Length: 406
Ligand code: SF4
Ligand code: SF4
Image (tube, rainbow, N blue to C red; front, side, top):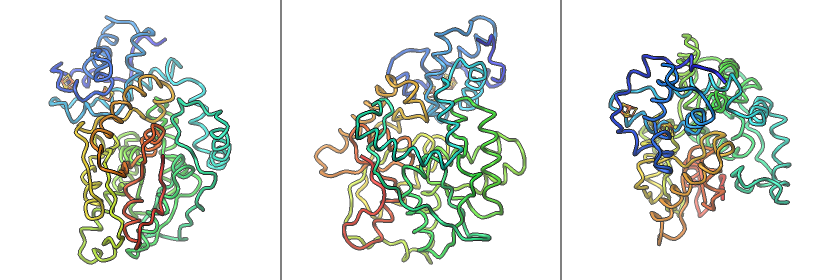
């Protein structure tokens, strides 16, 4: 067990004035009512440990490790406490000593950099689900047997890159195809990363595996050269790639991060261009009722949740949740490591969704993050990516061509 959290900056700790305004925004505090499971409580633990007033033991490590890293506390904080950076540093110190992030999670995360191996898990998992061999705590919605064909980008310099990544390319590839279809409709060629870009490292950062996340960032950057925009349709991946500049601290990483654009952000900009409005205008007679679930890394980190509304408003009846963007509990590998707390947090989200959509007939949850969509679908909700909903609206008739989970 380490004695200090070496990587957590004392200057960062000092920014917290203990006002408590973050508490109502914290899903683990809301679920438990425990101060130690709040942002203020966790910052206090970091301070006391580094001041020598508290030892790192099973309890104090547990309070830090049960943070979902949703970062809802950041925009709520009037003092600008860089909580995301602090908890990532703390997790990294703890993971280095193997007191958080169990070995089986590390093995699983290691798989993400091996797309062929990862692809092989898909039929195995689908079979395991049908035989009821996959533990419920994995929170996986039923996987279809077959995957869409892989995207084939152009040779040479594309107009845009579509980041295909790891989990999404195995389990939600249909959404990549929707992005590719939309790029084609507005006359853009696209490229896809080579094998080096098979995983952005977001889940490694979340798990405190700093060295692995740096390595994954470097490989991802090398996989999409040039200066074309990089479209990312996973909220967590996009957030991580936009932070490469601060993680690596190099000009190259900062330039790369500046090229990253979330898929809804990209689409919203296209829709606001008068020359492209006709190409993206809805033609379908099917107008779904949609309730938006903002992934935390869309709302609190990338702050692109307004774009989700922009791209859906012309083609869906949009319902809003009254829970101020509260986390769903998925949190990278969080729901695997802390299944009980994740389930309590998810139950609040599901209740918010069900009470908002009661008496509205058939409703789809729009979610732009693979972890959230699988975790919510496993609770019995119908979930789709906003990009899939947009693509369907461009096809005449009540079609559902994209991925649907749940
Ligand atoms: S809102 Fe910010 S300053 Fe106030 S207790 Fe929370 S982290 Fe500390
Ligand atoms: S990141 Fe989320 S779970 Fe962690 S302390 Fe902040 S609000 Fe709570």
